[in-house]
Amino acid sequence: MVREDWGQHGTAMIPQSALIRDWIGDAPYLFAVTDVKKFNHDDRGADVEAAEFIAPEKTDRIVFDIRELASLERDDKVIDHAVVVLHPYEQPELETIRRAVEADSLGKLFVLIWSRYDMVRTWLDGLGALNLHTHDAVPASDPLLLAAAEKIQSEDYNGLSSGRGKDAVVQLVRAFATEGFPIDPDSWLRAYFAVGGSFHHAESIEKLVKEMKAGTRHRVKSRYRDNIVEIMREQLAAKR
Image 1 (cartoon, one colour):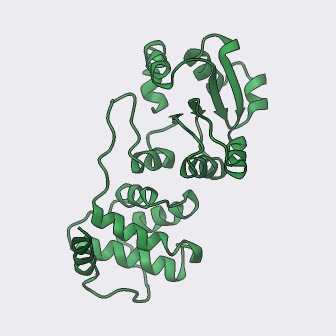
Image 2: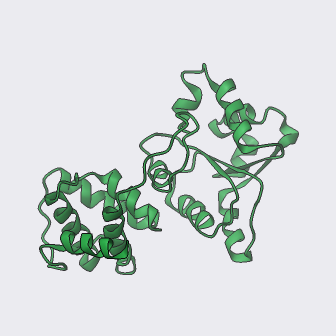
Image 3: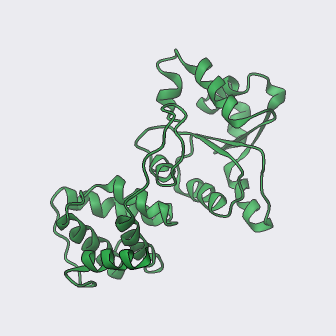
């Protein structure tokens, strides 16, 4: 849920918080925050405000740093109780959350997002997460786009901002645009996240696709045949 939808100019925090409680289940309520020390000493912070509405009784709250989620993957543990992540934004904390989800370390996860334009929302949409405000999820990416995203994700080890990785992103986006797919950063990022892409490389994809949408003609080396989309379409059909 986006914070703007949660608050609605200060008129909806109570009913929206009740909706969140119904979804996450019974106390104790586990809150993962960017800085637990700041949380404990800033009684006017946005994280504190959200936690107080979602869990009015302080004794029902357990608050910890987002970075602690990394220990779950290392220790091969799972939190069966729902975890509420409040306003994640920086790449390291987003990557920690992503890796915890990828490792199936979190049984249930709710994220309160700062802005509807934050990349964490695109990641959640790519995974088919339910938006508790609208009660729906963004439709899954086109299988053909997912196949292209897999090709891009396979270049992660090279980096996607230059070299072979950049070549792959630019050529595939161009090829798909010729086939009628929009040059839309969100569409490509949702597909990339759906196949396991990381926030680190997602920033490179977002930058390149935004530049292409604005008319930039990147100079890249040829990686694929001119009919790469047709080839991928035939490969998908053969798997069915």
